[in-house]
Length: 228
Length: 214
Image (cartoon, one colour):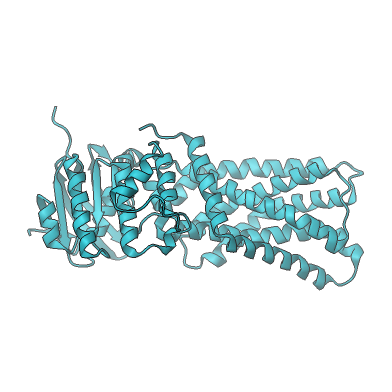
């Protein structure tokens, strides 16, 4: 019996996480409708001022993704709490870093898919136009979703032990995500409105640094979080 | 050189808040032995199994499994120990076979061993229903199939007969005998004392976390 290494374990668990998500599609549907409803509410709340809506479209996109992420992260740990599946993984034993990486990546994939779905809705709803090439916005979306997923997975694991877990997760997560949220929203706004001052790369760099920091912290801290 | 016992506990205590679940418990279980754990609800049986499996850390004392200190190298201990718990450690949205295939890949055993482990506990590998549709007895069998797939040196069985019909109990007894015959050290916690005594060679009775002569 030769046990798989960190990357192989991560791959096995990543596929398992995506399969569990796919099998429980009602959760994905709920996530899609929640994020669409959030976007609609922003546009209704601000009224018919299309210039204002267009200017803030990046912020609405990332707020919709952030609020949806709380649902997605909570659900991903509910699956692990059910039947003590997470404890079962620990006792196999599986490298705890592989559990963090797989769950974080699966959450990021879900958020990126949601982001890709929401951009055309923004275009239709708020009349925004993509000025920068789409691969740049896609790259920014991937980095932004990775930025939500890393601390989200870490704090999701912490909150899953608590009784008031649904309240605790956003309380822990939102303050930490402010720099990432600002960078993602500003970068998206530049993608929609143009980048005459060439600031896009600065926001991308900030997001990438945030990702490196929090994915690194997650790999180090997650094993301690899931031990008793 | 004499091999270290399968399980060696020295003055082990475990406290949850103000409540002591185990109090200065010491015991030694030889390799290949079968220990029956008895005691009323809340006597500390489950906590003792969870401490032995490294699912929880003791508040004080020392636990060695196959000569490995659980405090220093829990990962190495976990690779040798299998726990059949009240929770089944499975994913409700996956089928029995999918759950075992994930486990096989993580254990590094051939994926083809997964359907064989299911057949061994009379579950069909072709049954692609999610676990959430399984009966309590089927879940128990699946938990046992996980144990067979892992083939641990030490098997810790917490109330394995619960929720099984008489035929299921007989079948489980036979499977546990097979496990023991293959050299696995058993610790069996149960209220079904008759069945337990037939399967085990030694007995430990717990009351309020303390060992009492049975």
